[in-house]
Amino acid sequence: MAEEAKSKGNAAFSSGDYASAITHFTSAINLSPTNHILYSNRSAAYASLHRYAEALSDAKKTVELKPDWAKGYSRLGAAYMGLSQYKEATDAYKRGLEIDPSNETLKSGLADASKPRGGPSSNPFVEAFQGEEMWAKLTADPGTRAYLQQADFVKTMKEIQRNPNNLNLYMKDKRVMQALGVLLNVKFGGGEDAEMQEAESSPEPVKKVEPVVEPEAEAMEVTEEEREKKERKEEAKKEKELGNAAYKKKEFEKAIEHYSKAMELDDEDISYLTNRAAVFLEMGKYEECIQDCDKAVERGRELRFDFKMIAKALTRKGSALVKMAKSSRDFEPAIETFQKALTEHRNPDTLKKLNDAEKAKKELEQQEYFDPNIAEEEREKGNGFFKEQKYPEAVKHYSEAIKRNPKDVRAYSNRAACYTKLGALPEGLKDAEKCIELDSSFSKGYSRKGAIQFFMKEYDKAMETYQEGLNHDPKNQELLDGVRRCVEQINKANRGDLTPEELKERQAKAMQDPEVQNILSDPVMRQVLVDLQENPKAAQEHMKNPMVMNKIQKLVSAGIVQVR
Image 1 (cartoon, one colour):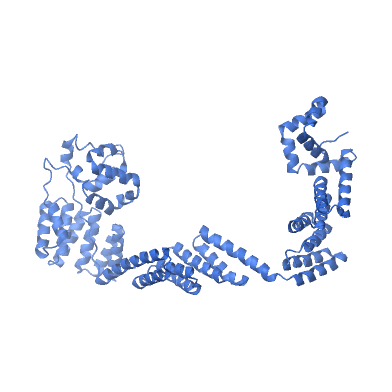
Image 2 (cartoon, helix red, strand yellow):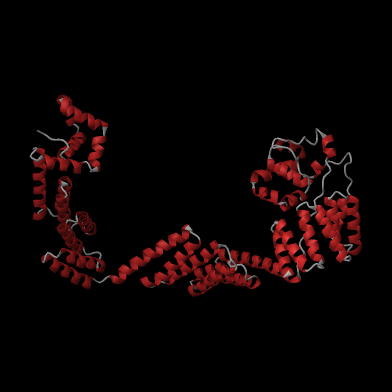
């Protein structure tokens, strides 16, 4: 139990959560109060939070329990340094070096504790920005670590490092002030507008600042097993990088070898599995890809891995299932897998793969269902019901015929006739237009479409449809009769022979026509209409324009304008 609490404390310390680290180390100490390593680790956590009194107490306990352990004196020296007790710190580091003369941490601590402080030549503001130590301290501090991801902050700090006298130019930048506090190990008081005086021009206030030397956070004490585990993880990452490089070069066998090695070294990172699955997918080894994806999902859930990684594994599995699909039914497990991936993480790429799979399944279903012979049988059954005036039953058989043979224009034409009889004019119009789309020379398609438009009292549109059909079949009597009927209705409207109710209905229907709406909203055409009523001479001039004439004719045909 103590070992588990210690491991949690180490993990919290490594992530910068020092308060949680202290809590876990305290729990471990309660379970194992004579373990000197636990006091040492908690001392480091206290020091990281600038709680140097508690750090000193734990360091003393460490030395008391294990007086021949050099690291205990390192902790002791660091705590004294944090309390600005440099003589005591120097003594502690020396005692540690007596035990381990080659210990670099103790040597560094002793050198730091032995530095002269407060002398006339000492300028901690300038020294704070010297060398790589500046970047190390900024990286170690949780408050400034995030700033190093900001390009403008890094540029500013490099500028100050090149010339510390430029510090005064950036005093209003809160990030710079916070970084300065970390580098000098002091906390600056005052409100948001408080500024520090420039070091070069105002040396006296600088001399009064006694920097508190921050003890460098040392690595937590870990067991040999933990150390080996960490080393294996690092080695696994290197193998992964080698695998990635081989994959990019399409050296798939090498990539698999590296990913497999990474998995052997570290079984707690499912990215090695998903990466190897990607290689298998590229190689066409779909069964192996699916196996790796299933393992990644199972292991990822055991380890409570990021849901995005679970989704990636499921998406990759779905891709492999699509590649293996030979029939419409084979797409079902792929579609289900993509849907599961989307419940984990709604990724646009996965959504596209799902849509593509559903589309492919539908197309394959149509291909599998295609049978011209059965389609003809169903069409004949529909014809029988049509003759008996059983139109719903006829529609059912015509629909089945269309499913069996989607390219047969006769089935669409026959169903359009049924819809017309049933008064389902929009559906009939759609089938008639499908006839023309499939075969532009199919005269019956034009006659069906024109008839439906005529019944919808869209005489202009019906006229256009009949005339388009006559372009393909000039002597078709059904189309010629359709033109004649349309002309009669249009002339009837032009002569004003419509009843008020018919005229009102005709105008209301015309107003739904976008072309009529555009004409009436045109300022030029509105003026033309006014001139037709009030200024005949101007109207005659307008009518010489072919475009204006065509628009007036459209309004006349629609019943909006009446010629008397």
